[in-house]
Length: 429
Image (cartoon, rainbow, N blue to C red; front, side, top):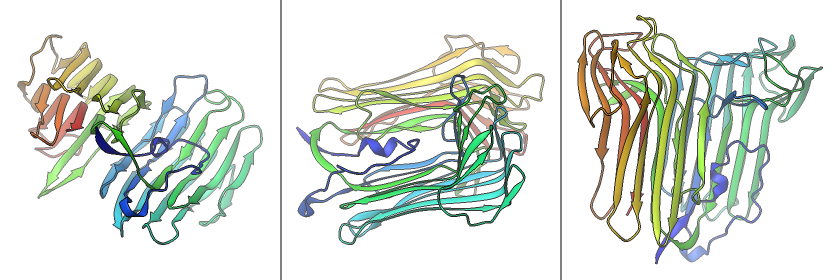
């Protein structure tokens, strides 16, 4: 039997509209260990009665029992007739605070237009913060600044009181500077949003009840409960990511699109997903939908991680004869299983109607097939990597397409890389 640190399931519930931390574990001071979570996004949308959904866009997220940081950015967002924005930047971090953590989730979005201009914001900045160090009283806060906010033609100041409600009669209910925080024992949780919009009637083909959350942020610090169980899990799925190396650093050009992280102690065997609606990175790629899923089990007899990522109607560099790369559907699955027998590490590629520079790719394409395409660069199809570290971790990674440009395109320099349909499953054991 192996002792494990259980990160609370609430740490993944970033879409919840109300928070409760009653009943969170309060660990014994002599053996106290803390867990954390922090997530931030540009938007989150649920359109009731339709297929329009968009989980955290431009998501940054950290989750676990060790210090961590993540950042993301996208040039613009558009989801149906509901949302249009300019640049979105997000970051999430957890730093040590004595024996606990301080967590920060931050989102900044520019040039926002919601409901075809009924709500407009020039720039909006939201931050949620929690801190618990094991000694002092924990703290939790969330706040937003909005520059140039107008709702139905009425102007609002930069600093609006928390949870201010506004109605657009017969159209939508709006909460400005949404904030919900709580402290209990040595646990602290905070959830914020710049705007929380609920449609009161059908609009743009979307039924009443649709919800639009701008700049959703979530942070948590809590004692981790010690229980008997399996190994810690990791990895996640990613729909698309384009980046360029600048010196020793990586500068993201598209942001990480459609990502989903696997919680360290799994999902109790249940599948969690991040579904993003239409994606359009001008000149670089379009897709009708991206979905990444994670499923994890961590119990004494079994530690298992399964991760998927898939895209619908993908086009890369779409202005060039319908796209240098196109697919009706494309994605990958990675799987790792430890159950006391021989470890299982495996992965697969899935696609329908994949074409590269007009050439049809066969469905049985071999692992790590590499082709060079004039005017594009090196393309690795069905890229597989086993990332095993004996005595520490078993991991498997599949990337449906991995492209390295030999020609500058759509603002991406020579040498920039594009990853499509990437999945990674890890068991730390």
